[in-house]
Image: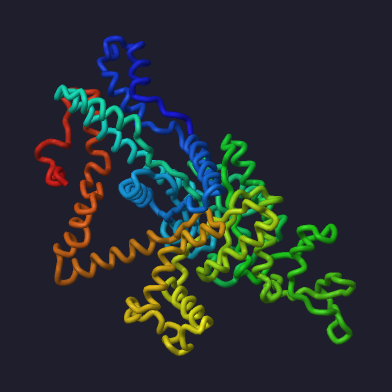
Length: 538
């Protein structure tokens, strides 16, 4: 990322132009400095270039120390992303290691002008780019509001003749860390052929995306990664889309752009077509070998309209579904995943992998990474800590299975299946052990090759839960007590800046600009009658 000029550097440059400290039109140079510093990036393409560098540096740091993994939450509005990053800054004092995930599922389900629709690429292509743009507008506005506050502190110190406070304010301005962080943007299966993928990729990058995540499903039959009926494309088809994404990055000058190649093969039992092999061991033959086939015999001859393959000296018929799709052999998903990943890295130029799994299991994830790293030693994953998993049930099942296998526990010591969800088990030895593993899950899989941990749909579920919690109280017996107890009082006590909602959306920022151009004539919103003053001490 290009080094930002310091306050002093800006001031020195402006004083050379305006020795009196004001422009001929009467604008103070400090006001110019503030606006220059508030404009943290000239364009969103500049954001993509800078954030690609951030991701590359984070990946290199992870290669040296796997405890330095990164995280993100899926956000379906700019405000969600803004509040997430503000929270991270309050907690850590830095945004380092925190990204935003832009979920195609949530665009389809929540940002879709055609209604709430499933994750089947049925939303407008432009909606993804629009959301990236919105997120970065929100993050940049968080910068503007925060820098305005710093300059207010600087002006107050100068007015009071507080030289120490003035220098402290300038230091805070120079050390300000932007709220802008990398976005990992879900481009689904590319929304069409390789040219369509390239065209859409360019729009996402121009909106600010430094990282694109693309999956190996068929565009026109795309399913959510945690639903049935998934259909994959031959590896050479997927590699062409990876190359399309790379060309989009290169054309736009985002040289460090990051591509995440996702494979859904673990749960996908179908393929769209049988690729053409040019010889043993090529991408096509390695894909074809996993097809479910039947021998061509006198009892089961080749009939009109059927396809045949020549394998191991014999003709066989690939099993074809009524819809024309071809089936894979049962139990081959893991082997296909390993081959997908190696091909994406070595022939498609992908930077990171994404393996969609059906349960969260550290050993399963780690063993697949181990096999991939036999060929590509620095292979790294992005992993979906999905809300589609029943985390409580899965982790408790895993603990019970391990304890039974170790002889620590009788097989019938705990209820089977959904009975393991009982709240009565929360403080049991089983519940506590499962929760401990849940707390360490991301660190555990990071040690096994996962560079980036994300949750795809947290803000979908959080919004539903929060609105239910407030509505149950507000429309029930508690009324205003429900709002104050569940929302406002917690905002105040946690130091959430949104409690001062006028300030959060830039009211003070607007006042500052009015003062810049109108001085004493400025009609400001932040006077004594502003009810936000009730929160000034918080």
